[in-house]
Image (spheres, rainbow, N blue to C red):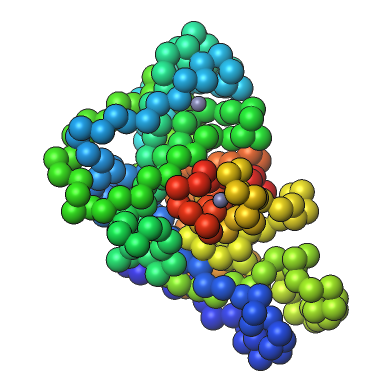
Length: 318
Ligand SMILES: [Zn+2]
Ligand SMILES: [Zn+2]
């Protein structure tokens, strides 16, 4: 089933034609739990990873900021138990199931992070599926991985790495990638298939020219909620700076202002009256299909340097 963003209440570019030069396309990924294959675009799915290429690991060891550590097996078991509980009327977890759940204060020992921590798949995006795909000319797939623990030097977020590839060059695929001994459970995405849909976004209000921003602020309709930025996982478009106010993101190598590549969001829509909830989905549908949570329901924005895909990426939490 495809996913369709409801039409905007009106065409904002007709009301404010100057907005056109501050608008851009974005591709909403609409991730939903499923069983993606290595040859599919996915969130949290298996990667088309060459068997002979080392899998990335994080050596930060004790420098990780540790809140609560769980094994991936525990995280999967817990999600499975809650998924079954949600199918019961009324919602219920049995005593037997509860006995399998980690207590609220339980954490695996900190010593487990002294070893190298394998990264986990966050997204695999094929150029053919994602209208706003960006990558080197010869690349047709982007793979996004992160270390599933908090890093103080990343603003207490996971550390992201990007890999662009030409899928025809991959050859034999790594069958069983290593998995981390422990994770922060909000950084282990539930495997999802994606339903890409291109939408148009308009720049975050505070980044518009002052006179235009003022006229929009005085408009009777709600620019921020209904016309500016799509919530949820997306490729391209603009970042929402509502947590800290806008700050420049510049390439660590060359100083160029960076471009938003990917948004990892804690929810696909916020609130039952959100105008961006796909028309196919009832108000009771889960708005958190990936089980990823960034901070307290924020988003992680992954930026790329427009000068070179070889320059390092950067992230911001908002
Ligand atoms: Zn790490
Ligand atoms: Zn650069």
